[in-house]
Image: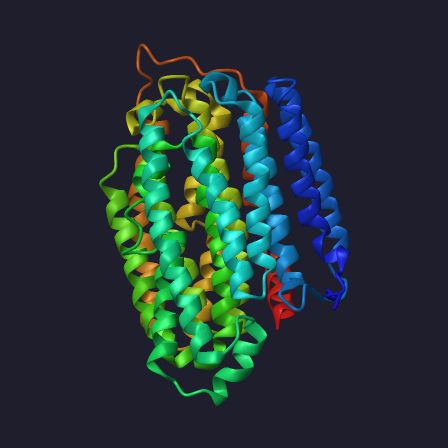
Length: 481
């Protein structure tokens, strides 16, 4: 008997196929040239084309393919565009940076594309096994990228730590998937959601949910699963750190939100308390630990932990408004965090990262543009109006209040106040501390500056005109239903 395969809706795979093909093309081109500008422009052009195709697909009918395990819906397209935009900004950041760090250019850009492919699979997957496959594609690529600066011992150490803890969390994910299947008899999220109201709330189901929370807690760097974050973020090349802080975290949340706000939504009462505690602990510990840091890179690492807590506040609500607020927050977080790490990369030099707060003394005098953009990013991360970070936090905390999670919203607001201490400390160093007599000269990196300016522009634009972004996030989330 000849086996039959379900029909494949190729348009649903088009963005992923384009980025996959781009990765293979860059990998092959890397055999013939190591010119970072040539490969960088090729990667950027390919991502721009993929981004345009993704925008063209927006508004079309939601499509399921591969026997219902993969979706082309507004939710997947929202994250596809977010990943492509983040990837494009990181490619710009990398042009000029890779030459100074002696990172293999062809391998770097190819692995970056493959990491984006894994992220896109995670966002579009409607089956727990496919989510796992996307996670592994992304994780293996990022493990290698973290250690790509082979001459730096701290990069090698970071890669090993990330690999070991990443593999550990993957074990929890697989165990959780197995338990969910045992309780519901399916890996597909729509079937799980349909069967949960009829299933007994067994120990098997609750244990599976707990395992999934632990696994995704590692991936989004939620407390107490955040231990790897500061060391890995500090040790990785700064452009890779930006990728992990923004795109990897967003991909993990894309899968997390689809699983919990769709597949496990019928048993919201069984998991919201755990997420409530995780959100409060993540916001609080992330901000308190950031206060003690003298390294800007470690400070931003703990800041990313705290921001994961803000997104968890929205997810905890279990509502459509909460899902929309989480998507909107991930969008604004992407621009302000990529930009912040871009400035960190601009300050550093080969063999001398210059990541301590003291190295930013007088930055506004040495480079008014870098000083101004870093101020925009710090104020936005703090939640200062009228920047994008304020709009993101406002919507997240508003949803918490609407769902009667008032105490959690208060904890979030208080944490935003605490975060102002370490963000303002950096602003004081840049604007109110005299420039050192032997301050190192800043390198000329036009592509890196362009990525920083673009990120700053969107940070301001979304903050001034947040309604459009929130509407897109809301429609994208509702399309998942």
